Image (cartoon, rainbow, N blue to C red; front, side, top):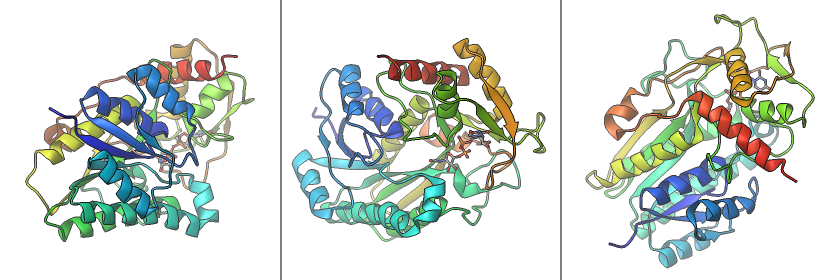
Length: 341
Ligand code: WQD
């Protein structure tokens, strides 16, 4: 039986590259399109090391419809996973049009191509950011979506609405949005991982860079939150677990009758972990002492957000299997790999 080809937009990026591995391991044939605006071709070399062959990759902008149509025909694409997007919260506030144009333009272009080619299945990278500061925890898919506090977050909310409306009008389309909680870790081989440009915004890359000596000190953003140790609580999910959720989501879509299908799933572990707990886990996983200090709160941070992932377990048959410790060990191994001479 020939393999089913799946287009992975942003497939050289952090979550995209790990999903390429998970797809290949599940018997799919991933095809990457990535403009390398926030990723590096070295991810393709890492994929080759892990998989033992070159994953087809188009170094192009997925906002370009002619290119997409060409790739769909040439590669016999049967479904798509759409990661390609800008994701820096602060930058999105300074450059709103650039974010709306890139994140929503590429989504609309991809949807047009799916409709024109009759390819039914799409999975969209959404974010737990849609829940803002939730009133009750853990958050289920029924937890109300809050008005977005960043342009980046708004592109995810509007993206979800575009998908819902487009799926409702189509006899063919089957679409899922996956709302990611906080991805951490790397492939255990340390051949692929996160490549933050400049100073990392996210906690775990900042921690690993500090432990590796690239940064002087981590600042914990506030210890006066109404949580047991005063620091914010998040749901940190191993990126390979997150990657595997896409495979389960795709298989779920393929088993459904054609058309008019749209749904959303939380993809998290269900476990809330504080910043200080994560630092302690990192120290124990890496054997390193972390230089950190307590600083003021960062504006826009929610106190606590963690998932109820029951729906994904019941309907997709997916559940997170890896521990936070494994994620932190893998993140550290990846950081060490990057620092090799
Ligand atoms: C985690 C915790 C910080 C850095 C963001 C996006 C979201 C999503 C994932 C993205 C918070 C604390 C952090 C530091 C710290 N999608 N922290 N010192 O804010 O939960 O979510 O990333 O693409 O949309 O908003 O993740 O890793 O930035 O922060 O104390 O130097 O670590 O306050 O409690 P966040 P994060």
